[in-house]
Image 1 (spheres, rainbow, N blue to C red):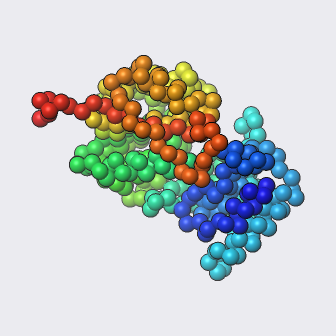
Image 2: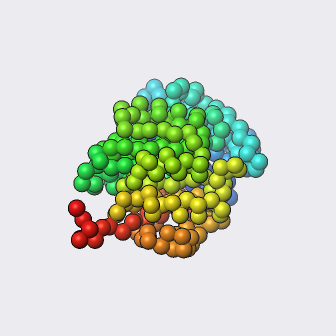
Length: 318
């Protein structure tokens, strides 16, 4: 608890969406079930275990004291508390202030629609910030970004697509089973003025390879599936089915970003399967997670891996 209070006491005024305290990384004994996020102007405390009212009161006092020190005059503190229990039960309480509606946050200049009170997924996964920045940099570094084709699988609210389009990518295909998530994704593109060239398909990816193939090949593919989602994706079974398709979907020299957020599966899970199933794709690097998400065991934290298809030989180039 003291580690969380110390983080609050040093918290800067949040402008971008960001994590403030990451107890889930195991680096702060007694706080393993707690995280604190800023979805400006709202602070969100999340606990994966019940908390006593006296603890919430103490946290609220610390937040109020710090807010008075850092916030612009006249801006009241708004904070919410969310509990997540095993079995998927989620409860959200607004502890002070009022949630904005609509609630739009920023990250590195991009704008995203957020829903704090609608379950455990708010619309933007903060731990994937480094992955989004990597996509942005790859598009900016491309010789002809306006000719780039990007495939965003398990697109959710299409944040990867937004950053790719803002960087100048020509076409992005976003695919996800959730019509609601994709609707938010379309709204995100409108918020950023980048709807042209972005398409949205509410389909089961494993039943849609025909459409995916017709829209390719792709300069960049993002694969960011849930680690486990009944009826949709089970990493230990379904990741291999995706990997088999990747080599034929990439242009020569094209890249793929493979993401996995399953504490029980380490980097070896992805690397060994890729080596067996798609050996022609070369491992490039594992992206470092944002520093605030540091974990006592990085193999349990989010894995974001970059692979590249072989480039054309000199005598094969046009």
